[in-house]
Image (cartoon, rainbow, N blue to C red):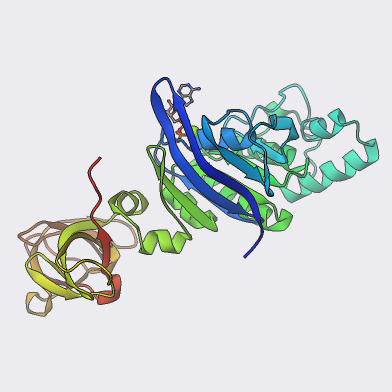
Length: 348
Ligand SMILES: Nc1ncnc2c1ncn2[C@@H]1O[C@H](COP(=O)(O)OP(=O)(O)O)[C@@H](O)[C@H]1O
Ligand SMILES: [Mg+2]
């Protein structure tokens, strides 16, 4: 495991009687690409601002390489931020924008030249040095903003929804690009997004948040396959979430059927919830299914069809490459590995 670079310890923050962060504990490691993921308003930007020093927590501490930096002003932190609004200087050239921080530090002209050229190369903007900012596309401006932050060689880069303003295709390209840049420079990225696909495809670690509380921390695969609760399961992907009873270890019951599963450690007969991904439900003839149901709709989605099957208890969303007429009676099965049992979430 890499060395710890930042630790947040029991951070709380209240704005106008509204508690926005409710005790955030988070450890971030060197070279990690960590993403804060959650719906708008859940407190992601506030966490970044507290790490950057633009906002002070009400309680708790921000530890940087073992030292409390809660009271340090932003410019004394080895952290740089790329905001959603890039805030580039419109009257300066690309070169001048990237060189700005280094010029302020009165660094040697030749060293500045080298560093800026290196960064522009890294973000794919070699040859754009003399261009004006308003002669650049949104994606190119985004790259300038990243180069400008990275040229200062921060130990940590904070990125607050930096791709939010780009159209879908460019956004995908920049996701790949950013990940590549992060690997090349080897510094810690703390990335904020409300887009689950973006978070899953780019990150080493995803932190899922809701209403000022961390719901789950894990690798993208863990978060997708082993969501800790209904919120994470729903936020991360389209899921069937079914109320169930954990009869005993490795045996769960829903829709009046018993299913073998791989989960254990629950109370006997505990009320639980089961996550079934649409791609994990297997359709068959009715007599071969663990459950049966009726196809009530079918929608072509490009790679697959999305089908709704009514099991007489509830609707299930199913993905399949086969076409079924509405009204067809089908069987539905799921292998034990693809049944994921969760503790029931307490209603807030
Ligand atoms: N300076 C502020 N004053 C008052 N309320 C704020 C301030 N900053 C953020 N908030 C509120 O705190 C909550 C969390 O905001 P934010 O951290 O920006 O969420 P996110 O980035 O996840 O969308 C929101 O309800 C927002 O309106
Ligand atoms: Mg935000």
